Amino acid sequence: MHGLESVPGPDPLDAGVVRLRGHDQAPARTGVLDRGEQVTVPAAALLGRGTGSVVAPVVPVFDHPTTNLMVRYHKRLAGGCSPAVALADAQVTAASGGPDGWSIAAGFVCIGAA
Image 1 (tube, rainbow, N blue to C red):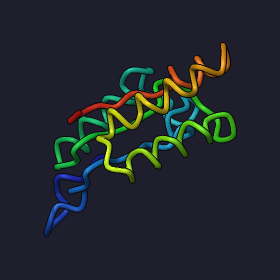
Image 2 (image 1 turned 180 degrees about the horizontal axis):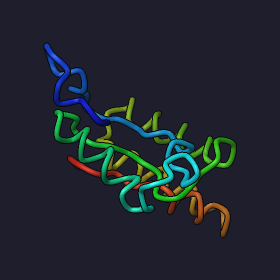
Image 3 (image 1 turned 180 degrees about the vertical axis):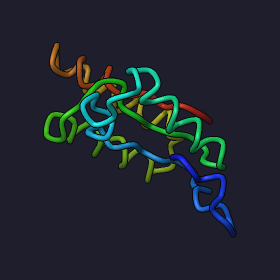
Image 4 (image 1 turned 90 degrees about the vertical axis):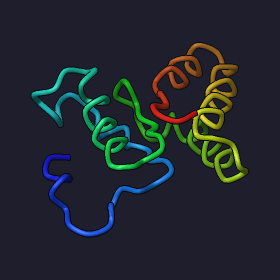
């Protein structure tokens, strides 16, 4: 995210919603940021540049276990739901699958506009 403020021309991050990839948040990849900063620093940079909301993992997540949650999230988003409502709906559905579903659902947050 460093240097975004110096990019000339129209704002390249003027997006309604950005979803950060789960494996980009793993501690081994960042090295210097603590867990909270790994989400808030990129989210703050994106929101500060005009992105409406950011959906991000708050713990390391793996692609396969989160596939159903993300598919449902994207379907609800495409259906007109706000990012927060789409994520909440996907989380409720995932959590109904028992303890594994709860851990998958709890792994994501939506920061920004509801």
